[in-house]
Length: 527
Figure 1: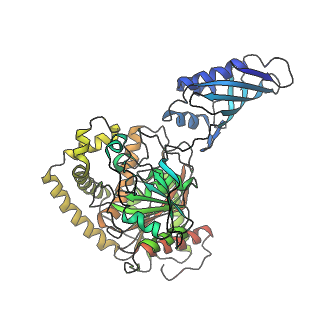
Figure 2 (figure 1 turned 30 degrees about the horizontal axis):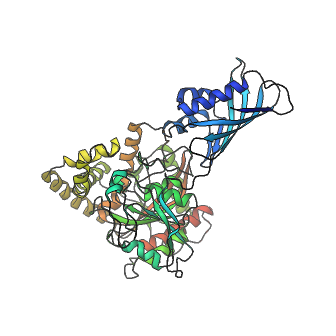
Figure 3 (figure 1 turned 30 degrees about the vertical axis):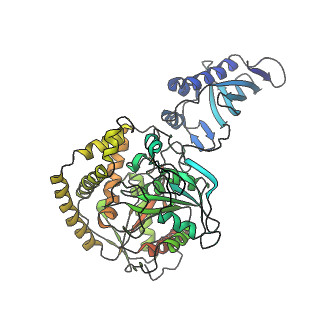
């Protein structure tokens, strides 16, 4: 039974209590149409929770599309502060069936037709012991580091592809986790962070088999995107990215096959480095496509990323890029308009700061994407196809479809695509040489949670056609969070010569300083 209290005594404004309880009933029923109608139309309506602020009824409605219902809960208390007959501040205390207490505060207004609608809402849910959308398992810490070293004081969110001693690898799939053995030793790339002093905070979620760049996971839910509330987080290193963006870890350890470090870093305003292929051991890491799989990290600042690179990558693997930068006009054609505007403005600012930015012609992006897709898919089927075939229905429809496509790649088609890869990689190496290519890290800002499957696929194809440049050549690529669009942040991606990982971070810091200071920072010799 709900306890109703009207501040100052007297009755509540007519119809208000019924509207509030009707809204609660729609929440429990997950009635999306009714919920949308309970919010005022227009771009000024607000909804806030621990994941951020949503502005406008359309964004609020879109957020609900992939979230699912709140589950059974009872309204225990309802307190009304009336502001005349047509407006009121309402506070409700709810008791979810799962325990705890939640608090919702809302500004309700009555329109000319007499209908009550929400103009602004703030939701405080019961505090979870662990957000399973972000983490599969956490500790305090889960694994302690050496206690000293260059990374002492840092915490790591480990993507659920890496072996961590005493834990299992789950690859983002509940059915896979249920059959996985307990790992006896940590992967060398995990152990290197521990030896450098970092603690493992926990194992963070990934897209299923890391075979996606969206960040959507039907088994565990979609991690939030703190930089763009109501948008997807990017994948497949979605959990580590969100953990870092939320401040729950300072380092995200992920993998990048087709962009799985660069894309979540771009969507969430993080630094993200895909390392030179082979520069960091992949022993103890569940494979997707070994020909392209790489270790990578995400951080909130470039200095932390520098420290990680110094701690893990051998100093002998240090290539110094040639002075000057490259930009590829053809790559911009697949990008959203806001990304093109932000990228062009950044390049103009760098040129104004006396950086040399030359145009370069690249092979057709469609050719890069197709060669990459065929060879990656063939490797994915070799790596994981047997498990997928023996577990029908275990995967999300989009991931299932990718494996089905991969299954149908014949040896002859893979061989032909391999020949294309060799030719295209040689063409890219000839065009780029030892200089650094600048491109957007993603073709758009993070899509909305309610984006259609066709929109997600279109953005996926556009982004992968650019990320394939580093994949086909084995080059390192760094996403630097310096581009801003009306739809959210986008990374500026630096693709350097092989083994230029450490220098890429230096150049990224230099570019960040120049762009943040309107070109007033002196240009270093590297540029």
